[in-house]
Length: 255
Image 1 (spheres, rainbow, N blue to C red):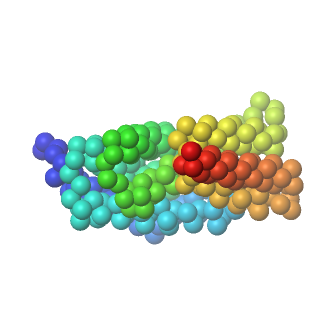
Image 2 (cartoon, one colour; image 1 turned 90 degrees about the horizontal axis):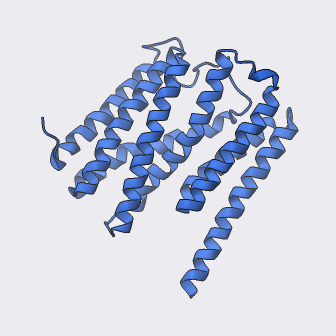
Image 3 (cartoon, rainbow, N blue to C red; image 1 turned 180 degrees about the vertical axis):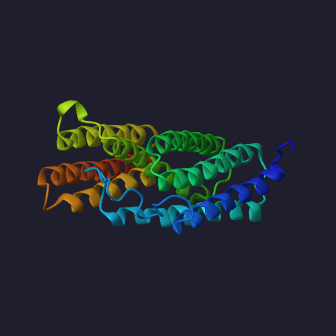
């Protein structure tokens, strides 16, 4: 079948149904021994935030379900949306496969899959920015916001996934303690988020970082104060960057 603008609507729903199906089967333990929410509970690196942070998936999944429905209702049939829907389908399939592999503790395979997921979100993010530059009509909440927070969360989740795999396969960290490795990893992650924010000025993207580092602060507030304070400092830095960017934008508008 040759892909066209019209049948990419159909494939969008097929991709979404595949994700929902794999999610449901994994949730009820149809695949591996670790249903969603209990995957590798014995493997919890220090950089994994408090559990409530993962509730952001509810918002992400709601947006991912709403996206193809809104696209169909509004009949978004331009070539730009055609390309984005293809990457959406690819991402949905990868997301579902990640859940299945995680349930079996195939962590290095999940690392490969989440890197591919991140790549697909880079393509989606790029496509949306190109459309904005071309003045294509985009509904922020239904077609842009969801991919911003999804991109932000998967960026963080990729780091967590790699750290979990290293711990699961008992990597010794070249003799460096897990605490110091955690500080290094969080520093690198913060630099990546700051760099991306400096390029794109996407407040929703960096807000995900604030959410994650706040949850990490709360997790270690009593048992590992150094990690808690470090996470809190990064979170405050993110907030200051948002305030600074908003102030600059306001000054530009005034000029």
